[in-house]
Image 1 (spheres, one colour):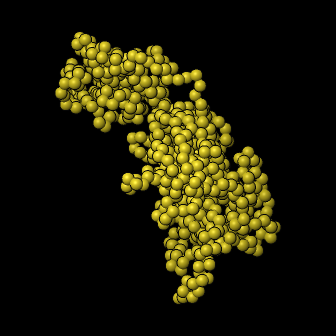
Image 2 (spheres, helix red, strand yellow):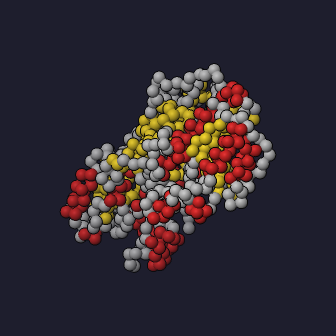
Amino acid sequence: MTTLAQSDPAAFTDYLARHEKKSLLRFLTCGSVDDGKSTLIGRLLYDTKLLFEDQLRSLERDSRKHGTVGDDIDFALLVDGLEAEREQGITIDVAYRFFATDRRKFIVADTPGHEQYTRNMATGASNSDLAVILVDARHGILTQTRRHSFIVSMLGIRHVVLAVNKIDLVGHSQEVFHRIVADYGAFAADFGFETQVAIPMSARFGDNVLDHGPNMPWYRGPTLVQHLETVTIGETDYDKPFRMPVQWVNRPDLDFRGFSGTIAAGVLRPGDPIVVAKSGRGSTVKSIVTFDGELDEAFAGEAVTVTLADEIDISRGDLLTSPTDRPEVADQFAAHLIWMADEPAMPGRPYLLKIGTKSVPGQITEIKYKIDVNTFGHLAAKKLVLNEVAKVNVALAEPIAFDPYAVDHDTGAFIVIDRLTNLTVGAGMIQFGLRRASNIHWQALDVTREARAMQKGQTPRVVWFTGLSGSGKSTIANIVEKKLEALGRHTFLLDGDNVRHGLNRDLGFTDADRVENIRRVGEVAKLMTDAGLIVLVSFISPFRAERQMARELAVPGEFVEVFVDTPIAECERRDVKGLYAKARSGRLKNFTGIDSPYEPPEAPEIRLDTMRVTAEEAAELIVQRILGEPSGPAI
């Protein structure tokens, strides 16, 4: 078989040149389960002749084995690549496919329809310019149609196609089509879509996908492909102010220092002025270097190394920007957040937030409200669970540079990472920066924590006792304080029950309140070590994340975690207050170890097996450790 490249090299070169110059449209398909998303994409690939003969043979074979359309080709199987999807007949992952016509190139994301995979759908939407929202003509507008339309709007997509699919199963009814279009328009009126085009179609038979077909003479609008070829998306990334997150500092030798990254927005040329967004220090571009040599200009989406005319301090995570249109710089911002983990999100819990190439410790300081994606109402919430969407305030450990998500998706989006598991647990879209009151500053103090500690003749410590209720934490901590007091040491004991009578009297025992309980106590313990004290903290503190937060508040080396490791059966036997009996009977809710979890420490400085040692022996071990005398990690 002779190819075009072999028979007419000039024509082949011309074809490649024309193909390179075509514009690219990224879009996603979404909607409820079994609305025909995968079938539509399969039909697009088939009709645009992007399938090889071996793919067609494989598709025919798979259609006989897994197909759901009788003897016809099941186009959904082109996209439903996972075996689990083929067996269930649903899409559970995001599948990306490429196709092209004479006028445009396309990257399409087939996203899941099932509610439990909403986070996957949001992932596909985050990089798309347009959304094709499918509706089964038999069922009309469903909950997932509303959910996906809302998320599409929130993620900044402004161009929507309402694809009323399976129109053949309702007799190609014009009346059904217009009723669904009216229903959709009523609830999506406030979403701010710039274009909203409705198309009746049958993805299975190809009606109004590439060509109109004979079955709906009453429809005179564009086919799906015609609309995708001609829709104007508006401002491109090239038109935006220059932004480039620094991925790494390139120093192959003493004579070269460049800053490598992918341009997120704008155009860059040698001689252009730039600034580091956070520090405000500026320079001019000396050269733009790539593997293939230097460039006269570079555009959004290109990976480059930039050298500058001046030596200025730039590190990984910094954002290089245009000096005339800078991003915001702040350590607090308001954002929309989609939660993507089984473990709930709670205000006060420490996370890592990754914005561009910058990773910063931070926390959700407030859940302003969560959004009912069925009614779009605002609901009060103390935590977020899987697939919930909320408006939140976020605080970071240091200021970062960002743009509102509506202005720039690359510099306005962030992900939330669990600090213990390193898993991505949330995705957010920044709305605007939050400014602290301008009259609040750090006050310089002449007496330092070192001076206070020297006055007391001791090294400050946070000795954090954790364990189940009834494990013996308070008993051991009390003995430790008496021993230290007898040795002339300056101490203070923060006990969980006592603190709840005052500082934390407003908190209950939900997971969210437990997180805030420990956050406050960690801050108090830090202040007390600044005063030079040895602070003994006796709290159940059931979650590793909050204990880690308390550790990070302390000066390195001054935090000692003591795990009072007592089996729950023994704790129940010792329980003089009868709390376990009440919890077992259901009269006491959210009790740790019964209906609320306890996460034991993985690497405590001291582990106490209270079945083997007495409280007195355990206290002596801890005193030795605090005063720097040799001791093992556990007894």
